[in-house]
Amino acid sequence: MVKKKNQDPSFVASMFLHKKGTKFSNVIDPEFQSDIDQETTLKSYKYGSGKLFVFNPGGNPPSWQKYVQKIDPSLNLASSVNNSVVMTLYVSGRLVSLTFGYGNSKLNTETLVSDFGRKASINLVNPDFIREVSDVTISETTFQTQKHNTGIRNSKSIFSKDPAAFVKGLSGHSYVDWNYPFTCDANFSSVGSSLKIKANIQIDKNLKSMLMYILQIYDKPLSPQLSFLNKINPITDDYLNSLLWDSLFNKLFNGMINNFSISFPSDLGSDIVSERIPDVKYSLKTVIPGELASKFVDEIQNNHLNVKWISDKIMKSQLIVQDEYDNEYRAQLKKSIITELVHNGISYVLLFNTWYSVDTNFLHDLDKELDSILEHSNPYPNHNSTNEKDYFPNLGSTLGWANIDLKTYSPKDGTMDRVEVADFVSKNHEFTHVKYGHSSSSKLSHLFLQGNNSGVLMSSRFGEQGFIDKINDLLKKHNFPTMKLGEKDIKIRFLIMKSDKKRKDIPLFSKISLMTVKRNLESLGFTVSYALVDQ
Image (cartoon, rainbow, N blue to C red; front, side):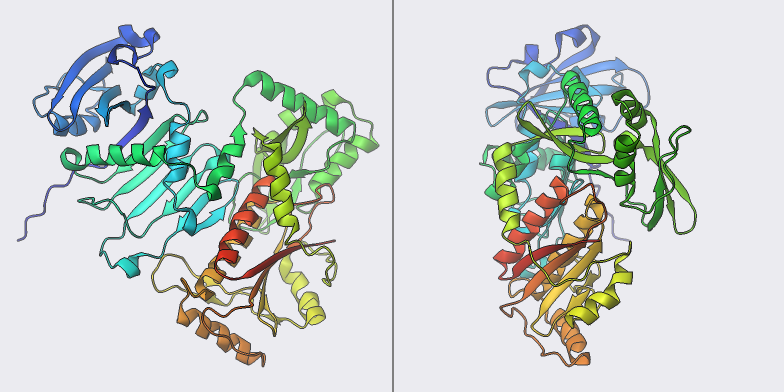
């Protein structure tokens, strides 16, 4: 029998970088200095000087003990069983802290580099392979596994509670010489100071090189493709949050909100066929998705409802949605609103109960870039449905397009699930992807990702002949000319069916997603456009 090599447990910790001049003596917040149960100097030739701060004994032996004992086997930690630990090390001449359990709450925040987690996590993503940006995720897919033939399928994921900078990546090859497959999950707080790490590595051999690598990543300039993440920042000040809510209530009362939509704040995995807000005095009847926001705003205007009614309705009511099987789902109404407003000359976005400030110049440049691909006058017939499938027959017959909806392909390298070719294709090889709902970030994210993945598989850089063969089989069925891998003059179009009269364009995070997909597809040689179809 072959004896299996013992492998270290997954290394899970939050990493913080301290400001220059920080000493071991002021790493811990003065408020918690008296709570330190054990303060130990780490002795390791490989890691240099360090300190271990242990708090509040009690409970089962935690996994962090195994990490520390790998670094300094001489330590006796039998009595240090607890859930709050801070390990501070000098790495490349800088002081970093790794926290376990609730150790992050013990740090002196005045000593922390505030943008460390945000910038490091952004730079961990390869901007050349971004495939999606939305209100919940920015993700990249690389196709380097086969090209480099490393034999190791490494992954890298970066998570955040901050939807404006939520980064998730999948990488097929690591440029660092890890002894084991390397997984890094980086999670930064609303102030962007922490980086949460989960790594399958040999602690005694690779921990220091991993920390050095992360510091090098942090020191790099932000990629121009991802620099927009620093243009959008969550509001953490309670007073400003309160002012923004009050501003929204007053602007709704005065009819000054142009982009206001209501969307259930999660992906149910099923179609929503109705939505409503229950109320005794003013009853909003059940309406189809996309119309509730209009009904809500119209009710405010038609009944001359006051600011207090608006405030109570938004902050206390629930949004109830129903799927095609009559199942009901509920969410707080305040967590279901997507809107934008200007307050004291600054642009703000409300997304699912979180306010964000947005750089005005960035907004202007974003709108200008997307306006360049918007089909302002288009031949598409208006729709009167809430499902793109009901719109397909009229659209296809009007334009002479072939309906290839649900025709899918599974990439050979396994980097993506089944990829849908498009909803329609024309004789001159224009591929059109259609989605109902211009106020739903999750639906639009899926739409843009679908078009991006299809384009990638058609490209000369990352394409697969099998995907082209699939397309050609479809083209032949409709007597359309066939195409070649990496063919030029291909257009990828996103057709968005408007769903709400109170929203004039798509939400901010959907614009960012479209911008990123546009740039990626254009870099691969495609022409990109989008159109909004009126009801």
